[in-house]
Length: 479
Image (cartoon, rainbow, N blue to C red):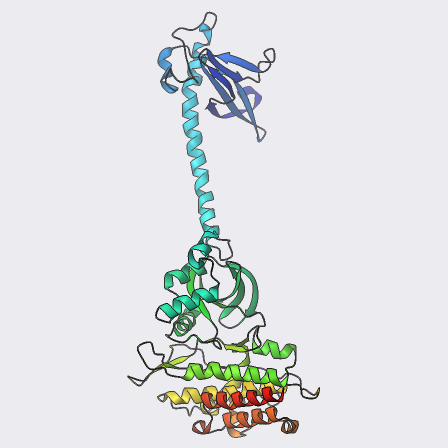
């Protein structure tokens, strides 16, 4: 075949076997037109793979064995595939050298081909392993069954947190859940990274993906979320934390419950709220913050925690129109036994627009934990102002705006906020028409008592919760 510009790639034994018997083999033979493209042999079937102009051609035929001693390259004589005779039939003696060459070449080429295929398979396997590390690759459903046993995420979390330490799912379960999540779509971005909607065993989950340079924030938030007894209906439900290698870099995942309504900021931008809706939103935020601030004493106790970055974008609206406080990456914990404050080693600070006066003018006593709680209350008052502006009474409502929208730039500096809040002592405007609605009048009073320049004079989260709870009872009695 050399003079025809062909290069033989390999010889393969036992190609094209049609049938076997003790009288020999019947093989496919592309060169045997007169015998219906078949041949009979006591030797073996063979195929030659040729490369012609970049295209493979396979030629199949029979080969005879001239010498019994050569059967060492083939299966034992009792095999039905190969039954050579002790002597060559008359008329075939001249084919000996060719057959010998073929007989030697067959196993050598077969071994060479196997080595080439193995070498080609290695990169493919490596590629498959690399693809398996991608965050959006579907994992076997068996993992879901193994972890959930047919339960919903809420049931699973409830069972494991109430029967264990109350600090969240075991780490192995967290990792199993995180690695069987299929990312669906991106739903938000921030300075920390991205938030995705994902699917786990058919349920929606939120996946907050931190950049690798923000590892400290990821670790801190995961640590806070797994505080004993933290779980509450008005605090975002934590599910899992995991660091995942996607083949190029390490992704830091924080998995939580998914709330399709989005943040309170988004919710208020989309539409107005009724008086009952306003009360429900305000009460749920106060309930979550009161639980966060509260210390629970006991063997299964909970330390007091301050949020430090409370704002409408860090509060999520649930399907039932109540709220859940999220984004605990800047939170601080108080150890009442040692009287110490666990402040995160994090370069990030809170959002400037929502900073309390004592933070803006650098007058806050960082050694007293109550200072952090009082700063949260100031921010809470601003969030209530955002909600109340969107409350529709008699068809009258106001467009959504951020606090201090009319006196500072869209991205205010610390100096901008300090001048307005500390020097000019301005606060968001409370419209006169709120006095005509009892619920809005009470909300306005709460806001003022949250905005005092003196932090010690501000309401506590528990007092705010009780006042709005009473307001809710009054509204229900009217209905």
